[in-house]
Image (cartoon, rainbow, N blue to C red; front, side, top):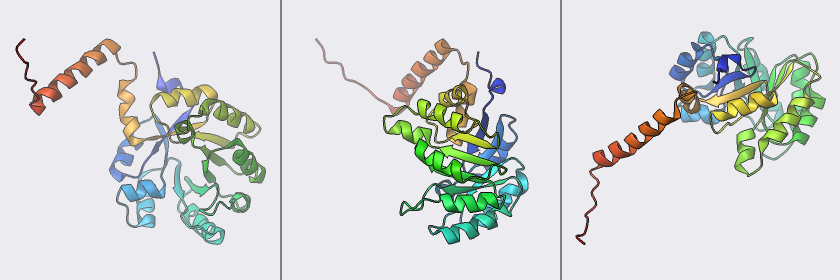
Length: 242
């Protein structure tokens, strides 16, 4: 039997639908939240700051909001503003800008200022190592490695995540986050390799009630679904007389 309450990993909810965030906030399994501009756009958010402050007013768990400028000077100003919104806020900084220019110097400056960064869109161990070299050891940081997207390329992300965890073992303030999971099982994968956090979309979180479900019962429900959908669609097959 799987008991999510006994897992060491922290589950963060990934999304920007306000009502869903409030509902998930009441779930003791959810230890924090992450967002990004893409999710906010999808949720119909039009005023970035207004939305963020509305969320922060209702949610006191760790939550990440991302900068969206493309030059580092503007990123820095946005990061400082976002960090001022609440003590529970982590500022998401992409590993590079859209030109492929590294953001490590900016990350160093922000970390030295005591700003908690969530470095996002990390895909390689080289990127992770370089970020770790620029972080202030006294400032907490989240390192978001996109394990799900790595898996989309045909590579197994598990060995990469194991090595990532080892690279951060020297400092308990640095946390490896398994990003972009593709299925509920990834929570167990991330826990097994020692990841500190996994951020899970609202759609995947809806499947939590399926954990430990009886497979024979699940099989029958699946057969019933196929039968019901075919019946409701009015499908018929004319059988030719032999």
